[in-house]
Image 1 (tube, rainbow, N blue to C red):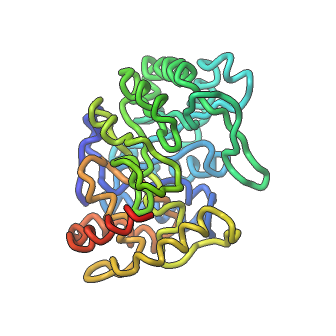
Image 2 (image 1 turned 90 degrees about the horizontal axis):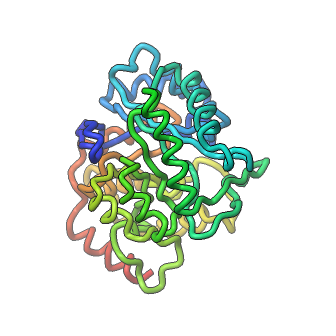
Length: 329
């Protein structure tokens, strides 16, 4: 396993991290026993960065992380998140943050988390948005710049009390004119940024006919502010794989992306036997990303993902062809 520095946190984190959505039973079939085995084996494989959220399975992911890492806490870094869920939370953010953090600490079986991240969309206008289709559907609040900074200040109180070490934002689907001032505010140390084979707009301007969510070149903005970059959605919610791990509706975004990436099979060559490996290595080949946190829910997925750290960079000629195809989308 290779390690990189997570921005100005100074933490040396495994370039392959452990995303906690899968062990929260958010997508794909698994069992708690398999999840716990995966968490423990991840540490043996050198993974030391675990990213979770109370939103993943209603706390189930945090519970599995906490139980799986029992006795191993001093060898790992744990990142979790906070989401304001009611109108009352918006009017008393400090109480809402405290309540969320204390519940997370109990589930994680620890006295502190290393990174606490905002788990909201960031936009120029507030209001509710569909955060999870369900059932039942779940909604969250879109935070404006002012609310994002206010929430950051409420989170700082947890840092002062020693319950949190560093603060972060989830910049995925965030409006650039909101994300940029948050990253340059000095309040936050890390940012979760979407970047994958199908959507590279966090690093460069979108293609002319691009019809996905523009990530607003958030990576250069984060670099400028020495923000530790956590790569997310490396597998486009499971679409960048040889087969889907769950049923999806034909008109869903995942189904659309899965169809699109059939054209990328030419990248599977040499040591790369699966599209999943190619997708993760593509993210690791970006030196500005400190760690990538793919969702893992089984030992088989873990072994495949962890091995990518030792694979060579993707072929330069193949990357030239990939960019040609991408620019034509």
